[in-house]
Image (cartoon, rainbow, N blue to C red):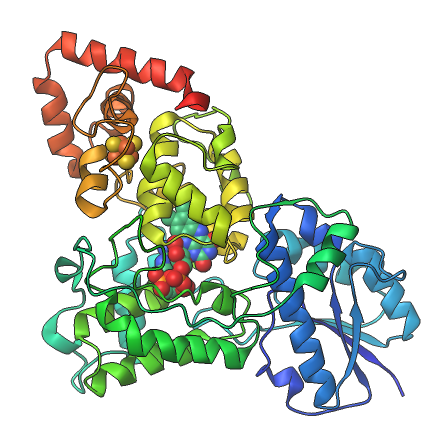
Length: 510
Ligand SMILES: Cc1cc2nc3c(=O)[nH]c(=O)nc-3n(C[C@H](O)[C@H](O)[C@H](O)COP(=O)(O)OP(=O)(O)OC[C@H]3O[C@@H](n4cnc5c(N)ncnc54)[C@H](O)[C@@H]3O)c2cc1C
Ligand code: SF4
């Protein structure tokens, strides 16, 4: 019987895909752990463990359902460690008559597979992953030739098209599309963050195999008490727990940060969704149902749904529209290397130590830490966007280039010159102090602009706008900042610029 080989990539763990609807002896599903995928960037240990463990779980599930599966473990003697070499081996091994794969979400893999398939002598076919609401080009079609892509306009169209949180007459529920003005509070310490209900796995043996294979990594493996959902049912349990205990407060404290609570009211569902264990449609419909059942306020339900139906689909559209080349953008020409504390968390800046520290400990940190602490500092300090992109891509368990790159280069570093963000997301200590408890107890003084104990964010902030006047001076959203700069006397500005230069020269010892 002629065999068709069907490739499942490590972020394609969708057990509900139509590929599995019928069992057939003529189909062999292949999953491959390989150095090509562990080594393209230095990864957090938990990310490697989670992807391998998730792949193994799906393979077992498929085998239990009677499917034929060929699984190449990282230490399998047959493993050639690169995708083309492994496919050559497997296609020959099964004398396959056809090759199918699911559309990769990363440009790098998309190119590799398109090129590979084009050179094959047997028929080949790329199938949809059946995961996203939109196709790769839908956002580009929505925005036409516009130079600025306003997420809000894409999001409204998505709400209307999919009838999410809409009235029967096509209006947004609550007569507002967006409840952001209700959603910007700092967290006073109560209500306490819900308990961590994620599953607990022992993946010590897998971690030993990964180490024995010589794969380099960083961050805490936490292999014996591994806390990430690794299959659909665990992800669904996490979703239900989130809806019951955290979602009611999500909107209100979505932008808050705290040294006492790293999860706050966030869902921790990004890994499950990005690996496609959990589909965005299920998440959105469960959240919408919770709102209709009266257990979640509209502002929270809307704020959360906007992240998934809006931001997640939108950044994917940005990625496919701008790749290749997007990864090299660098509007401000920043080139400083990342200081060593990106890999240790050891800096006296309490906010950065907390955000980097939890990233190293948990392979996760929530959005505002990523954007307004780590990204904010990096942009102000002039760190190289490409080096920062590699760090974000490696450290976060949910980091896959299609979602990480537009967030890092576009939203956080403004490296695309403003396709995605209407202004750079930067702040002085005042914003961080308002939204967190980080500044209390920090070595640096939040109110000081110059001097040894001055908060580094302050001088860097003013220096950033002063040195980028030509690029940013006409941005109407920055009118107030440039008014203030205009009013500043030149001695004060010179002192700030000297302080900023000194800070940039001593990044390693901050
Ligand atoms: C510099 C930077 C890098 C980022 N890198 C990634 C990344 O590699 N992978 C990733 O999934 N997200 C990334 N984000 C977006 C966001 O920070 C994470 O999605 C979120 O922190 C994941 O945690 P959560 O599941 O608890 O999210 P929640 O706060 O509970 O949000 C729910 C879901 O909304 C989606 N979402 C929220 N914000 C965004 C966004 N800006 N873009 C796309 N989807 C979003 C995610 O799927 C998330 O799971 C990044 C943000 C910044 C500023
Ligand atoms: S004082 Fe400055 S460095 Fe310290 S926590 Fe506050 S913002 Fe961060």
